[in-house]
Image (cartoon, rainbow, N blue to C red; front, side, top):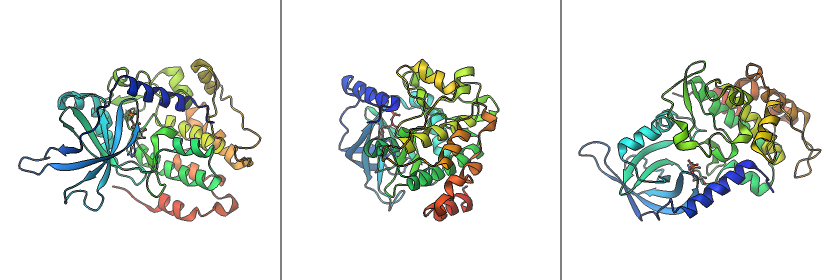
Length: 338
Ligand code: ADP
């Protein structure tokens, strides 16, 4: 069992969603108003429920018109908790949606549109039909080395892309890493992302307390500098710390800094106190290369953490001939994005 803080929180959020009746049953059809005057409305037929979060419930949405999005007709239709006027929605989600809408990368969930219809607010996203890495690790207890390599390289590719555009995600965790039909990793949920103007300065950061008090940065993944200096005093290296936590969790089956209380988790993170089990949950050895890479990612001094290129250059990815890694590596190094 994944005795994981993140799982517990997801569970609590689900319960809250049930209890407070946040999510109205979706209408059979959802109409997206025309983008331009005189344009056509787009019609989505709602399908099965994909999952619930603290702020939203997600359904499959099949686009029934031709034209935009043709050929790729099933999306994830995210219904945000309550109805908001367009203005209010814009205020509340401005940063998240603005940042997310600008991201175009094969390993970032594609953002299509946000709109209001009847009494709800909808966000249309690329469908990730295989759930999150969190689900995968829960089901499988831990992942194999080739899986961890492939997913980590894809994660690094997306992070390299974001950081090159001065975007820091700040809430990377297994539950925010979705898997598409072909098991490609896709970063989702830009709720805590920020645009870095200069070191330690953010643009357009909304009041997080209003939205994320309960879920704000999952304790297990928070970098020590956030604990020391608060949310202002850190930069893109917090995402690199999170790669270390995610890698450890994929390899072992639970995050490195586990404890009964939040303060205890923070204390362990500050002291980088974690232990590798003798064997992972499939009774496989965890190779020294993996341990070395995680140790390099989990450095208290943010400056010492490697950048994404250095991460994928680590021997962990080339050991045993790299298990079918060449294609993933080629994608990582050769692709260029607008
Ligand atoms: P919140 O912002 O409230 O945490 P999430 O973004 O976690 O909401 O979405 C709620 C749930 O919907 C997720 O846990 C996941 O199961 C599902 N979900 C979200 N985005 C997608 C997507 N692009 N494809 C498939 N399922 C998704």
